[in-house]
Length: 107
Image 1 (cartoon, rainbow, N blue to C red):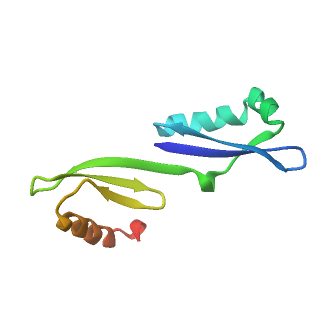
Image 2 (cartoon, rainbow, N blue to C red):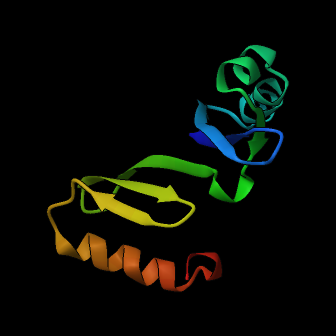
């Protein structure tokens, strides 16, 4: 899932509104941002122009995982966190913790 965040600013750069849009593909995310930035009806409704805030955007995916022991669990990866859910055996959490220690981008 891709979430793009926006603020609407008046001519004096005062914030007059905010919004976010969610997309299920990179292509949708890119085209969606362009659509929001050119949407005159939103400009009129907010009394200001949209500005994309890329540092506030969110990206996430949920993976359904099958452990060799037979247990199924879910791993959610986002820009700022990793979440493990629906597991019973704490060894799964420990395996994931050990794995994340080997991936520089997750440290």
